Amino acid sequence: MLLAVLDHVYVQNFINTSPISLNRNNLIKIKSCLKEFSKMHRWNERNRPFRLERRFEFESYELTRNFLDSLGDFCEKAKRFPDISFGKTYVNINLFPESMEKDAPLTDSDHKFALDIDQLVD
Image (cartoon, rainbow, N blue to C red):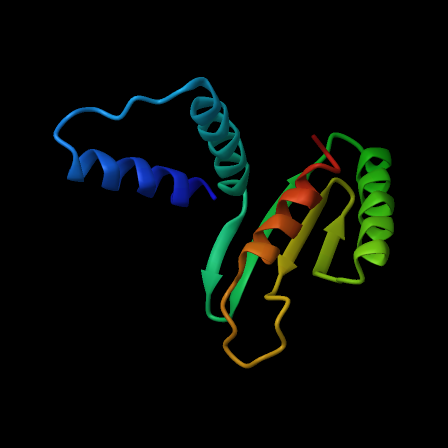
């Protein structure tokens, strides 16, 4: 979504010699997209195989356990199960494409799922 908005602004700016007038609604949308984009930078995108990965670190085992419990409940409801490894104060998540096709690329749905996981700790 962010790239679509920014691409639109860039293309419009490139085509028009005059600057684009951004109204309040567009600025709010861009701000929201930038917020999501910055959250996605917490996830590393890998290509072999296609996946998103992130390490969550916690100050105590109790916080780690609470996150794992929340993550488990969330994944059960979503019927989607990423690869998870963890230790006393960290959790590593590998999120593969929802599509089971060989070499399926990551989609907006995969990125949305990652952002939803982020909401468990934010």
